[in-house]
Amino acid sequence: MATLELRIREDVTVRSRRLGLLFWLAIGWIILIFAVAILADVLPFPSPTDMDMLEKRAPFSTEHWLGTDGLGRDELARLVFGARSSLLVGLCAPVIGVVIGGALGMLAGYFRGRFEALLVGSADVLLAFPPLILALAITAYLGQSILNLTLILGVLGVPAFMRVARAATLALSRREFVIAAQALGATHARILLRELLPNVVLPLTAFFLVGVAITVVAEGALSFLGLGVPPPTPSWGSMIGEGRESLDIAPRLAFLPAITMFLSVLSFNLVGDTLRALTDPRQGAL
Image (cartoon, rainbow, N blue to C red):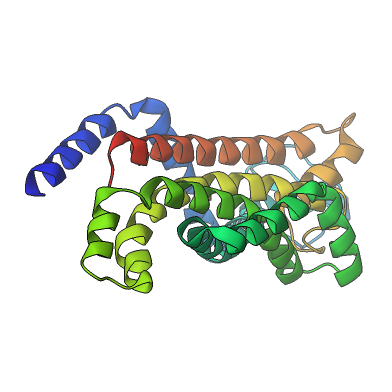
């Protein structure tokens, strides 16, 4: 066992040295947007909702580093506070998906039988609906709020996380350490929590980061359509939607939040894909 653990650590160490520059640039960008989102209230920026109609679409200046939008609001402040809204939904919704979907997926992959067929069938039914259309319909019915948006996107993410957890559990449930635990008389709960969960967490964590990127895009799409984060709270999607009215006069109002969202989504995808490669159980990670 000690020799096996040593080999696993050496394998992970060797692969971690191949991360590359893009991975660390993505990590740096994620740290930056999280830092500005957390410290938005103490940073020297004006309020993102204060309007000055005399400064509509003002260019870059020392007072407004990225200019102002169509209502005279500071564009940089709205980008910073918009990061808080987008990341709040982007992080909390996948947490709902990974907790509920991960638990159901592990149970389905371990117990199999009719229980697995019921869960997989339910997930297939939910996946059969176009997620954006379903989110639009539910949001229009429940009303606009960050809580409703987070719950809707979280529930829509449950089937994907359930599939990942089930696939990992199926691959691991017949491994030697699980069979040995069963032979020693371990209960189902102990096997699930002590043997399988530490291994299933690895692919779920990697997919969680990809889920954050997908959720940020989904939140941006709903906000762009006017059914996401309610105004005047800024978010990157709503800023893109507001900026499209000024494309011929000040295209930066749409491009700046779009570029910010693009870099954030790309960074989460890069980090998630890299961690998924490093923690692939087929590579020997136990």
